[in-house]
Amino acid sequence: MLDNKTQKEFVLKVLLEQGEISRNFCLRNYISRLGAVIYSLKHDGYVFTTFVRENLKPDGRKGKDFVYKLVKEDEQTSFMFNVNVKDDDIDGVRV
Image 1 (cartoon, rainbow, N blue to C red):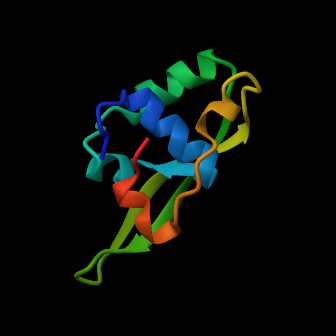
Image 2 (cartoon, rainbow, N blue to C red; image 1 turned 60 degrees about the horizontal axis):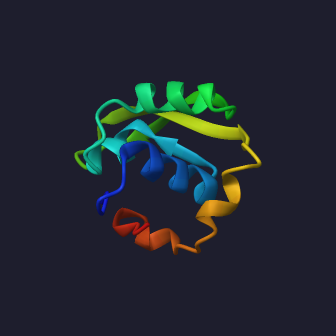
């Protein structure tokens, strides 16, 4: 849930807390253009690796999810999001 924050701020907060973010997670949180947000963060100095994670869908079929993993943080902004979030609470992330 975005809670009146920009998509970029939301994605950055999750990346700094969890170290990675997936396309499906973003879609569940109403962010459909994760690639554009990542492009903007790269321009700000963040470095990412990407990979495809295979998973099982609820009906048992195989699925894939595209994941961005944060490799290098921008030292000037990483301190701004120093908030602890429980793993089981990630869908309700509040900034």
